[in-house]
Image (tube, rainbow, N blue to C red; front, side):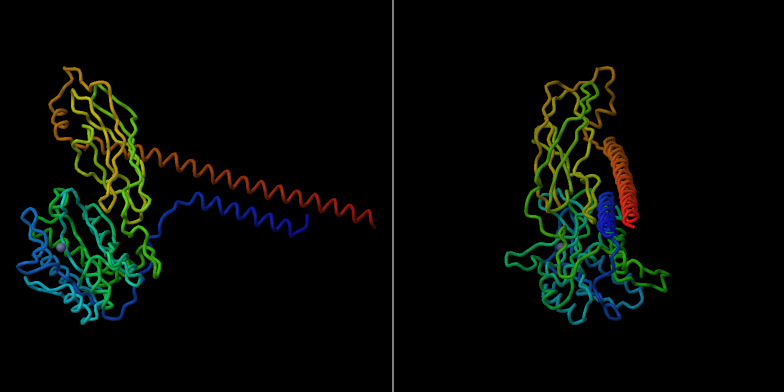
Amino acid sequence: MNNKHILSRIVLAFSLLSFLFLLVLPSVTSNAAPRLQKTGNPIIIVIDPGHGGEENTGTTECGFVEKDMNLLTAKVMAEELSKYDGVKVYLTRDGDYDLTLKKRAQIASEYHADFLISLHYNASESHLLYGSETWVSLNPDYHNQGYQLGTAFLREFREMGLTLRGIKTRRHSKGSDYYGILRESVALGVPAIIVEHCHVDHARDNVFCDSEEELIAFGEADARAVAKYFGLKSASLGIDYSEEANRLPEVTVGALVPRAAQDLTNPEYCHVALLDAKYEEDLVTVQVSAKDSDSNLLYYAYSLDGGVTYTETIPWPEGDILTGEFSGTFTLELTIPDGTTPQICFRAVNPYDLDTASNMLVFDKVFQKPVQEESQEQEYEDATGKLAPEAESPDKDSELYDTIYLILKLGIAIAGTLFVVFLIAFLAKAAKTKKESQGEGNTKQK
Ligand SMILES: [Zn+2]
């Protein structure tokens, strides 16, 4: 065996080792990329309080008046953002009047805005949705900037305790952006984003927006998001966010971020499997699996009466909509109303509110506690369908799975390394033996 052969074997072994190394590396999307958008000095921000005037009130669900909420939050955001150095802030409207979307975009364009930020509060027809979302342009020249800024906003809202619905896009039937403010802005060369802080018509969300203090807190969070995205500093506040502008998600120039693409299809499947049934304790443990290749899973809900009534939508556990990582499977302990024979099924919901129902778990026995053990507290929990005791279950299981997964990964890595070490040693020995035998041959020839 000559040196060339040994070298090629070593290269082969090294490639194998690299492959094994890649195998054990977790597939994490980079969230430490620099801001893509180039800016001049000062940075110019135009804040657009959505809606306004008599006709265009925005949502008025549950006694909220969106146009006023948007204006208050926008004014706070402008004031807070103005405390940073090297930034100029303007509003599209500072009172209760309406402007066309085109006019709002024109104002931003006339100020040479680096970003037009349109602030809103949300409501859904079904009243089942909750959480924060941002809408960004599909235009490849503006999409990436919107995606990075949208991430900065959602990070702030997550800090506040809100559920995240993602950084999203929606296509108009004519092919461009569905939302007019994005369409009109990018047509004038202004990057734009729509920020939907939360849903006023859902109990999980309206605690975040039902007082002036809450609307102010959103304005402050909005200012922080923009300050972090642009890496601003404030001498008066003693804040330096310059490193934050390097902590943004990695995006590619001219390409859409796949997980921001509009998902037009329901999750591929949702499946529920029975792990355990404790008939005398009114408890069932199930494993729920679902898949949506186009986007995350956002919520789930379940029914104990064969799909006639469902629980409220519950956040899909173990998911991170900002990185796209989420577990397709979780376990859950359900409390069954005493004296009933449940029919259990689940629904998995994606960020575009499309859902898929699971198979049905049927039981042939009644769940019944022995009479003396029945407690009032348990009855109360059954009646309200409280979920608190179940929350621990998926965490524990997932910790166990994580540990097993880690051990498996380590095992593969060690086995791979040992294999390569042995391979190199074997090759080296083989080469040595050959060299020696060649040496002997030479001696004989002499
Ligand atoms: Zn609105």
